[in-house]
Image (cartoon, rainbow, N blue to C red; front, side, top):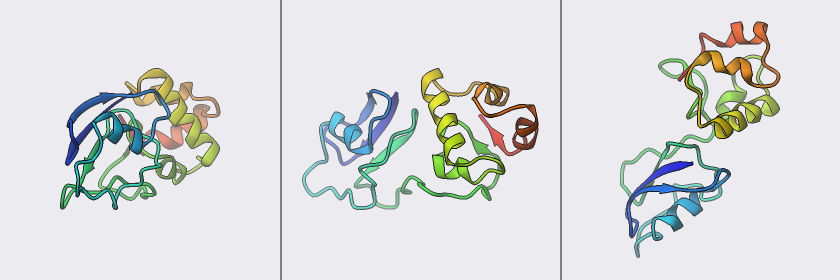
Length: 136
């Protein structure tokens, strides 16, 4: 997986990490936080999502969502949604949300909403219920 670490780290930029890595791993791969840089708003134990950006010690930077709702401005992005966000979709519980994330990790992300049907537990009926609520 590839993430962008920026802000008050010793070597800001793109880092490549194994699937299942945590925010703390990304910061460490970027050389660690610079002295005095605050990591308080970051959940260092949170699993990373491929393609995300980690802001270290940057004032005003939004903290990554760990439990958002689906009532955002539009459909939920299958490639960046957290397990908690996916769990809020109708008919998707914690197990299915994790299967979606596992599929995304194993296949390098979703390239189309239709690929959601390839996730174990998502049949045509559930797909039809979800397709208008998600995007890539």
